[in-house]
Length: 101
Image 1: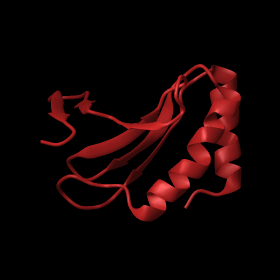
Image 2: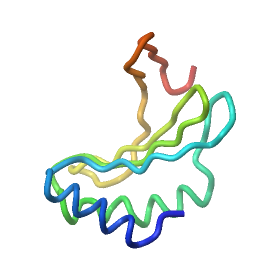
Image 3: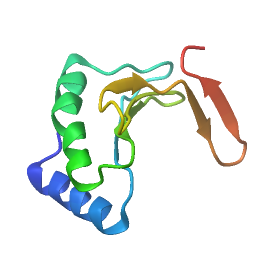
Image 4: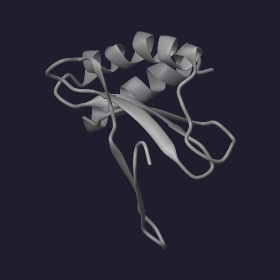
């Protein structure tokens, strides 16, 4: 669970660098992860606050498993969550996977 001090620090960094913010965390298992009910409830509370400091950029949340990821992105135009459809892991080797494969 993130505390208010962590969120405040992240908001400060995003404001200074005019960066998108994505809350990222790990569910320690193999295969496709999913947001829990708690994740969805908390994301809906704090991601909209990211627009208060950087209103023109997308923000969101991502949850990783050991080998996959899923996420939601809030766009400035709608400020509603939309599913991230693809992820690319940059490194050696480069890996790509669509959200539902």
